[in-house]
Image (tube, rainbow, N blue to C red):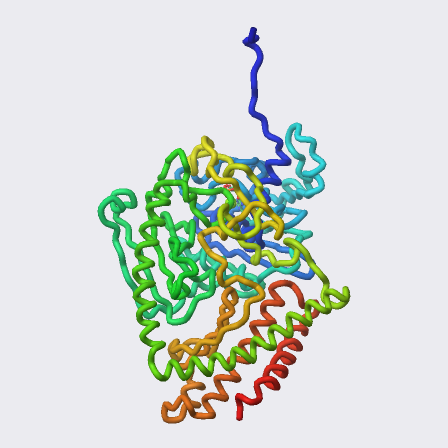
Amino acid sequence: MVDGTQHLLVRSHVARDLLQNAALFKTDKLVVWEYVSNGLEYVDPVVNPVVRVELDSRSKRITVQDNGRGMDWAGLENFFLMHGENVDRKLGRPGRGRFGTGKSAAFGIADVLRVTSVRNGRCSKVELRRKDIEAHNGEGPIPVNVLERDKPVSEPNGTVVEIESIHLQALDQPAIIRYIERQIARWPRNVTVIVNGQVCSVQEPAACREYIFKPTGSLLQRLGDVQLVVKVSKTPLDEEQRGIAVYSKGVLHETTLGGNENREMSQYIFGLLDVPALDDDRSPIPAFDLSRSMRLNPNNELVQSIHAFIGQKVDEVRRELVEEEKKRRRSEEARTLARRADEIARVINQDFQEFLERVARIRSLGHGVPERTGQQARSGSDQRDLVIGGDLPAQVIASTGGLGASGEGGNRGGTPRSINPEVAPGDANSEVRGRPAGGRGNRFGVSTGGFRVEFQRMGPEERRAHCLTDSRVIYVNLDHPQIVAAREGNNINDPGFLRLVTEVAFTEYAIALAHELASRGEFIDFTDPAVHIRETLNRVARRGAALYS
Ligand SMILES: Nc1ncnc2c1ncn2[C@@H]1O[C@H](COP(=O)(O)OP(=O)(O)O)[C@@H](O)[C@H]1O
Ligand SMILES: [Mg+2]
């Protein structure tokens, strides 16, 4: 007999819930963006948002300060409510906020979250620490330490978020800035974000060509009357600049090449597509994903249509580029230059191999360079977001996708968000395999692979040389005024020209090597990179002396 008074209740273990949510914020840039976007979003009506970010790798600390509307006591209570309903969305103002992850994001990389907020002349300051969350037994709410409550102040509205005891070896400032720049590129109002004194400016790569595509047939029905802009960059793009940015009503959700990642010439392609229908999508399998992995849910039908449309059009453009590139390579001049490039690359790779062996020897001796393992070995931004299926080691962090969202956005808290498990990077022995989120592949990302040198005409305004860190290709710009000047009478066999391009490639290699080490947090003293670059230049110049004869 079932007693009618018996109830079976769904409960939640708040501490676990919080930490599981936090685990989705695996990188410094995701965490920083979470608080920056709050600062940009929750502002008083006439204010132009200004958010200042301080990154301090040495003291393992991040602060994010905004001039937003601030939070009073009730506002802070709402801020710390798990899966709280977004008040702005409820009032019919769609924005980026969806899942209420502000209270947990910091714990993806750190142990302390402190929020100081001023609203209408009252200041409150509260703090949450990982040890308090971990000590929680699962019954009832987790107490937040109150450091100050409603203290009268004369300061204007605004919030300061402090994140302390960060576990990452180093904070990747350039990657964080690039990430923010990409996010605010189409922000509907005038916003300013300053990271360690540097203003994030939205700079699109220079395009040499632009295509506009419109969907037809069934894609038109599903996507609506949208416009896909595909642009071809003059120079090869770094990983985070590549791909079509997918927006809905001005909110960026994903950057993708629709399956063309790592295909030939795809490193030149970028663009955008805004699909308003995405924000209104109410399918049982939701389009969005609370992991903020910058990835739409590939199980959602609308998302599948978006990917199909992008995939098809990007591939068309890409094939055109491949054909042109083939033609270019066939020319006599290109073949001569390619031979020279190979000679330079040979010297660079001999040096690189020796460098790797030397590092391995020092490590095996157990002094000098400290050995690091697992996630700690890499900087925040280096830990790629993974999804299931692929060849990268991964660990399952949840057996299905994230929880349902509450409120008007997402899926009204109904269904699991993805039918696939969620994964995070694992170690080499992990049984599960993942691939980078957003379809970013890793063919270029092999860390022991060597360098390649390419001579390209990128235009006189572009940099003299550029190394793509994921593929280790060093591009030398033949159009750079210095290199043009060295090329007397357009003769590519001119010794002055050949010496110069060799030197340019060597310099770029020395910088790229130092950059890789810096992004892995290998430099202890701030003068280290300069010393390292000088030593590398000296070594390759010595080894490549014959190329200057
Ligand atoms: N910097 C801020 N200034 C003012 N209000 C904020 C700020 N950050 C968060 N809030 C308030 O707290 C709520 C919860 O924030 P958050 O956890 O980031 O969730 P979401 O942004 O998804 O709503 C927000 O909806 C907003 O009302
Ligand atoms: Mg938010």
